[in-house]
Length: 229
Image (cartoon, rainbow, N blue to C red; front, side, top):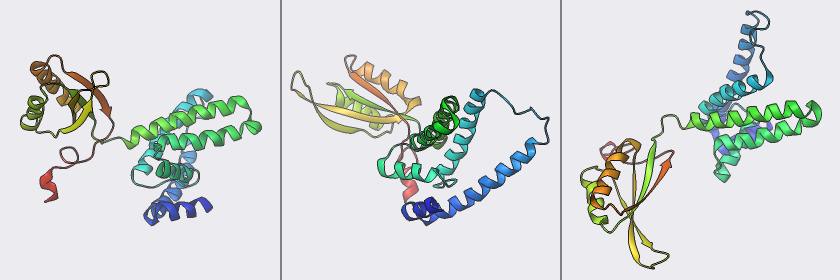
């Protein structure tokens, strides 16, 4: 209850209401699924602790990720993790891993080393699943940094033929001390081969740096300019 109040204060009333629904839903489905398991033969769901830990982490991580996507939690220790995420900008999955790993390790004196280490494995699996679930539906893109003497022609190709934006940054060579524009181009992954081909055709000596981008929001990715009119 104390954590729920803290969450309501720092994360908002909408979060508190959704979390309240999630908390009761969580309890209901745990009870329901516990009953369902009694309808199967006794050892149907019994497996090696390591395997159980991995699948427990994946399934619970997907569930938590779905809650986090709509700004909610299942109550309890999810709330400190979300507070860490809000104020430090550490990903939700990593925040949950930090809190849950500390919780599991604190139980080492009670349950022993091996159960604690198996629990930590579940924690890391859950954190991975949370981050992947949160990113479902996001725009996967790449960020290209291009340094070329033919930067104007490359820029015009991106603007006119690919209909994508370009940011021109001011760069300076560390060895030559010469100033040279650097093009920053964010495009969907499927368009990169077209861009690379055109750059190599215009300037085979161009220097290209490509970084993966997990999420892009803005015109051309999550909305078109006409959508705002």
